[in-house]
Image (cartoon, each protein chain N blue to C red):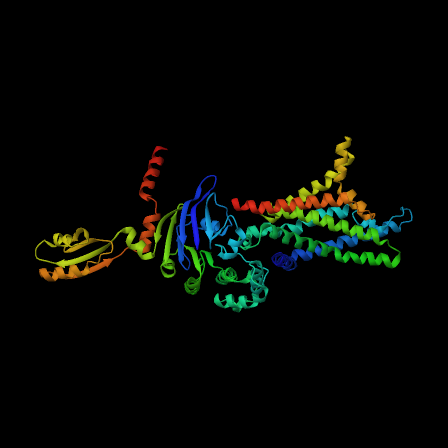
Length: 246
Length: 321
């Protein structure tokens, strides 16, 4: 446990001492601020339908997905690929920590950084709360959805970072895998075979997030996202172990 | 302390290490010598468990590296060839990180950092970022990190490479000192280093051990002989015969006017006998010099391929083409 915490701490030090972290933070806030403003402006138009603004904010727009699909690979790309390139991985894997601990520590650090990005968005909730009543249930569920997506995306990003020799390759690879994971659910609209439609619907991340934003915590969504994340972390551990054969 | 048995590492196109076996008793400093690409780093990586061998096994402090990798890693302090530190961490932070990862008890961390910083002469850069350190400091910070959990075994891959001469002297002093309370394997291709630091030398070439012994044994034992150059002024020509008759003289060649080269069997010193012979016969002894081959000669003889033969083969090939 202490070893894992030491790894997490080191990773967080690395995040906050690189300019990349602040670029991501700034871009994220700028972008979310813009989306929030768009949503509020749109809903202020008397011709628009009545909707909860936070529901749109949590995954209701394509902006949310574009940014997430692009940003999480950038957060995770460095984690293992850079250690391998610089040679620090050799020191790490010859000290008494298991490959599983290394993977889990790095995953936890990436997830914490991701969650840190979302903390300022609580301000939007406060702003809305001062102007109207908000339903706390859907807001909490929305943030749960964001946590789950973070777990899923960070795990996939870590897996590609374990496989790639260089961080740019890791980022592009992660982006590609995440786009497939994201868009496979959208194919639901295009097929008519019932079982395939059902299966694709089960994997539809947009629908999952939509449910969470409406305050609906469906355990099937939770199980799907956590199991894909678990599989990715398991494979990342195996990839690290297999690199010893080289 | 370190037992290596039938260790092999095969890659698709070549065998990097082929059936290497050796034993290092507790408290020994073993020098791993070999030309670049001989398999030194591969062997050391397999001892630390960073690489999995294709065949064979390694036991460190009685622990099978393949069966219980975490316990084995805890017993080893490892300094890889290219010392890699995290550039964004301060030296103290890095050592604290290493201490936690290596499992140093929390209460002892501070004292250990002070101890290894002093020992490796890095206390003065504790607040500096690892990314801004010079090569010599990086090497020593890496070594400090490898020592922080007081490992029984130290594996050091070319610890003095890239250092300036003064730093090399300092690191060698440190290595000698470490040899007193650790079992050490260090690789190098610098020969004087081996003579100064190591009590035993393994020479490895193209993945196989070609020599094993103390530096003295290697020098004497492997070539089997030393040489005497004798200059004698004598009236007649019975000198060569008389020298050859001395017990221990293997071969005598006359090299010029009154100069003789005597090949002497291993472990024999003929200088006294030569002097007494000259006195007894009334010859004038003008010169007497003994030469043992240097470790460098041994190394070159063992690891140099038959260059002439290779060149001849090449010429032949070119001719055919």
